[in-house]
Image 1 (cartoon, helix red, strand yellow):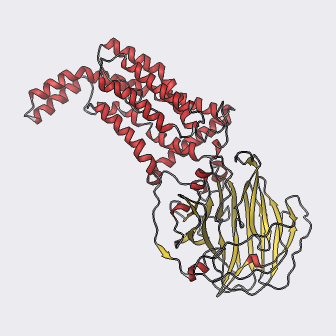
Image 2 (cartoon, rainbow, N blue to C red):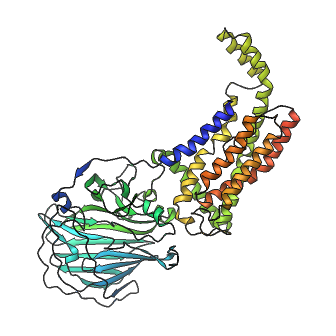
Length: 582
């Protein structure tokens, strides 16, 4: 088996073997789920007994701005049964429930009273992709609120959904006020999908904290619901460290995972949407405002974990707390302007993340720039991008081809020297160097000739994740494709990609003598890649198909040049004959 065949098989192994294992998750120590741990873990876990609040009634002052309004009633949220081994949750007092809507420039936050927690978020710029339900996008769980608050006051823990607040509006600020405990929580719309949350508790004891239960599940609004549920995860960022991401499927339903440290933000997310709590935007430097994140697995259906429990805490400073809430798309542009490294909220590629992520960011920013400046749809942007990448690689491919031809001419001389000095390694090495130098080459020339085949590898992996996880391609149609982020329903693009691969190989073999091994590879490689790409995002298939078609003129010219040279040389690396396709 020659070197070209071995290299081709190695590249196939990289794609077929490494890609499915790009998502390792570092396991952290887990502790047994004890009653005391459950009591501090989540909204649906056992809570410490609390005294009923004083007879406060829910009052709502009519809104003075269009940014906030109050409606009534909203459905009562039923709590899930407490986990086995926990004490029964305290009964909630019967109070009227109402909803308060706070609008930001791009979102509408629905707050619930009692509790002052975040119930759901409406994103008017986006639509649900569920078949037959093309309504406005709402970020919400199937049950319960998105955010649930509790106060840890010394030995007492007060669940705020047992506390009725008075709601007041002043300008763009919505204030929830309670008398037992004496506290206020203020919500103020900020830019984009962000809202500021501020609060104060009167006479809070030392060590008091606001305990926040993160969403335990999201209502999926994607066309591929199962794929969306596989992306359910919690995450956090400790200052000056990499982002940590924990998928729901990695959590045990009988054990608590406690990640410690001061965190500048924590989040819960699915494939395209994220709810993140972060230090206030504009802080002088990254600071850990949240202390720790405890997690536990929830409902599992088959191999999919649909729910989990996540809780973090914000220590009070002089009885006060402050943080920002981002609820919206995982858009690189929207997250990047907020700082806090929030654009890395969805780390991917597993142990290859440090290498792949920079390339993915570069590729995404290039595509966004092309979309904004060319005024084309994303489908045509991908077509132009594929052609541009092929043109950029054109000089490298030409140089690699000429190096291959030169090596073919040298081969008889190299073989003769190797035979002549077979038992004298030093003389053999010296003679080989003289031959290389006389032709202006070096022993590294064959390896440099393979460079065009290796350079596109980072782009390959980067674009795989860009097309699979970037919201910019969500629901974007092109020609017969309804969504560039999903597979081609008719498999036209993958078949076209495989056919173009075969055509490149066929053209390359026209300047070569009959070789059964090369002929077999020219048939097998297109079939392998076609099968492998069948269920990949149609945008990724479109990109590779365009690159193959754009490579046809160069492959034809290379074949003619080889024919004129009269040398049985291999085809251009990366362009047929078993080479890696880019």
